[in-house]
Image (cartoon, rainbow, N blue to C red):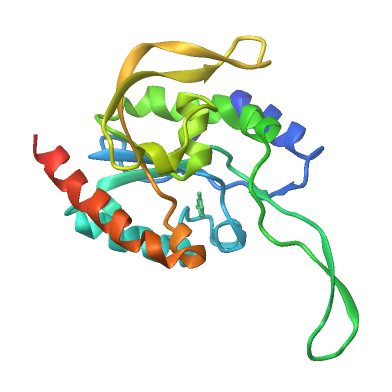
Length: 212
Ligand code: URA
């Protein structure tokens, strides 16, 4: 998606004050079967500018197939368009030397709010028939902080969504209502293999939802 320069440029400038790097635009058809809202790009994505092109992306493609979809059928974006990174000191296992590394991390609420007008713009342009959030960050960005993925994964929720307010100090509820299906983040199984069966079931269920 090409964001209007007057929308994206100030956000990119303000992002420089945060531990954020790169800028990956949302990608996919303008009339998709659904829109996927993830968390934020990782290292792979800021290198090749393709959302969900790393390890989590491979899992996402497998899940999409369960719903009878390919990457080309969906528009893929996330709550934040730049890579949030941390700073850690560690001992290099091979050389034994101290080194500073910058691993991916979860975006903060402030970073999500800073990038919120970009996601609002994408949703307004696409007017998606279904919004699939993957992980807690995308879910809470749209439906509020009280939502927790383990309690609502795979459900179909008809609701208004949070949009950045005019002052950009917080959120207001949209006038339009959307169909939202919260899913676990595809990377969740890297940390908890026991989620695999639920994830499989949720995406197979999405196939039925799409047929209705
Ligand atoms: N996680 C996300 O939410 N988005 C990506 O593009 C990659 C990983």
